[in-house]
Image (cartoon, rainbow, N blue to C red; front, side):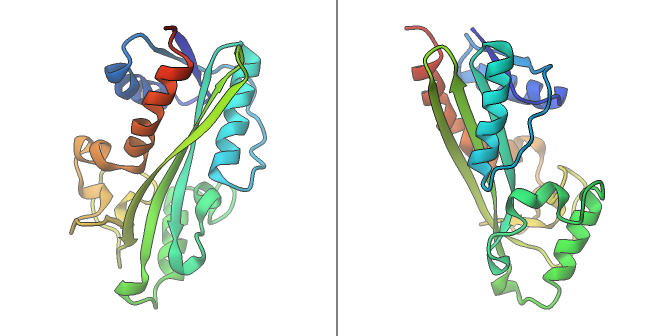
Amino acid sequence: MQVVLATHNAHKVVEFQSILGAALPELEIVAYDGPEPIEDGTSFAENALIKARAAAAHTGLPALADDSGICVDVLGGAPGIFSARWAGHGKGAQANLDLLLDQLADMAVEHRSARFVCHIAIVVPQTGFEQVVEGWWPGSIAIAPRGHGGHGYDPIFMPEGHDVTAAELTPAEKNAISHRARAFEAAIPVLRMSVIPN
């Protein structure tokens, strides 16, 4: 059973296939080759749905899309949906990370709580089924970057219960406990119910 993933990122297709394929071997995750929709939602869930609906409409296949980012409590949940462009369009991951650290420079450790959030939207055009599941990874923002693994804000995110940053975890360790892993866990029974023929 083919399911289209609403991304042009080949690495993400491989990641979704490896994680979902282990639990649902009958699923084949395929890449999306259609136009990029405008992500003008005001939440992770809305943006994930926008992407999944576009991919489903373009291909006629059941579609998956994810939207994720980092939310810092003292910033009212920002960067949130603006995580990928926090320092401005085209500025890149390092500029985003540097700006966030600068904004928190005077904050004591106890006021640096944060969480990574991932929402996965599932859209089945044949039945009109739509659902969004979510995963949260609680933690805090480190004083300075540490580690060379991962990407984005990983070098400054300290997962709850750990004394290392997400960038200091191995890929396997991160994939077992991350926000995306928790969203996948929630998505599997929904996919089993909505997409896979009985």
